[in-house]
Length: 355
Ligand code: COI
Image 1 (cartoon, helix red, strand yellow):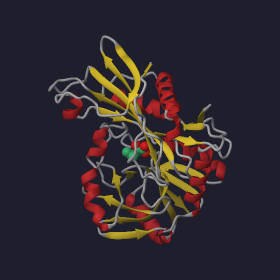
Image 2 (image 1 turned 90 degrees about the vertical axis):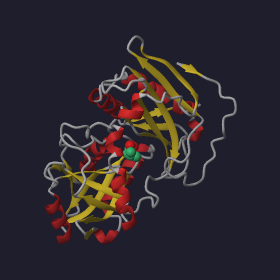
Image 3 (image 1 turned 45 degrees about the horizontal axis):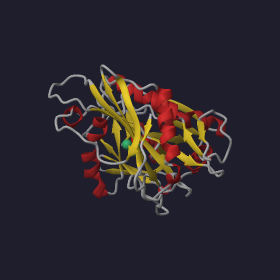
Image 4 (image 1 turned 180 degrees about the vertical axis):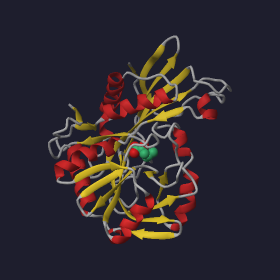
């Protein structure tokens, strides 16, 4: 890998709450793929605009996949990566679904580690802040044909971030969409591809003026079973002790935080299950007080309490729209492991030593 020398790198200075996705570091990683050469020309250079042919496939038919993972500042000054192997495995599953070339996971993790190490000053030392890592793969092939690409760009950029939601660890309001759907079995819902998100933003914008920050998607066939929320998977707490989340149905993103919470929660004294969740039953249980909490889980969202759902013109409030004890417990237990405040019994963390 080539590491370019930067002329005038900016100092890593950022506000106490850097927001989400507003700041970027000085460097990024890039490599290219052609059928003859495979992945080649790996380099870390200056962060900046990508030269792009107007006919590049990504700009027309959206051949693009991405990931999101984070680096955490430990108290000893070193840096933790959380389950980056799971994100890289998912990137490759997304690549297969979209007919893109896979990237060797170990090499990919090496690239991420090298980039984070070079940019280590940008890993925030502030509470609840992290360095968000965004690997992206796009088809740069110049063609109007609708077919798999033959030329790709893989790049990774870094962004120091605070909480995804502006209010931090406070409940968000979620609108349940009945008129629009995100994904269907056999489609691309399990892949982390741009189109899955592109189809949702206008719907989210329609409900934003009514106070909803996120949209919950139902299954596309019966519009009855709960799937996932815009930027996170969804979980519910029954009677304060049982955590239930939609079973992976073929159209739900296999969230790394989802998988981690399902593993962690039993060790914290909760029971967990993955089920087919009927929206009417869940809302009825919220009204009866049997569902005591709801929260989203994701890399960006971490564990984010849901204070209310809106569905077909009616509102369903949970836990008086306050953050509940289970979400709070899970948030703390998970982030304590991620930042290295408590030992990691699961082998999730990789520590990058900073000299
Ligand atoms: C993440 O949680 O990292 C995501 O990619 C979700 C969203 C910000 C697109």
